[in-house]
Image 1: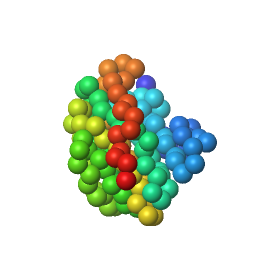
Image 2: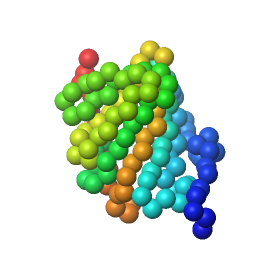
Image 3: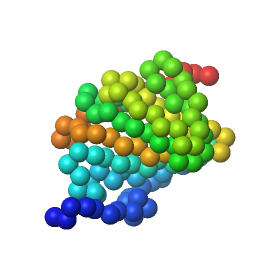
Image 4: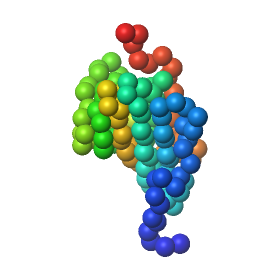
Length: 128
């Protein structure tokens, strides 16, 4: 195995195929990394992740590469704009909502147990 891997995110299958207004590409299994996962998310205007999630062990960083939106971190909602970087500790429940022009971001995750350590929480966003 080479000491590096190059993979274009557009060449990875869209995990959200068929979900209107969402495009999600998970690269962890495609980059031969023992320690990192990299994913790209695109959401159209005002679309939000339909659930929150947290981890037992995995710390994540989110980098907004286009558009704007909001992120719910436990009970706090923060505004996001292009080039904001958000580090999230494993135990913090998080979810993202696109702004009026949509949002695109990269998520980078650290080591995790085999098979993952995420916990999904339905109904995380408040009813507005």
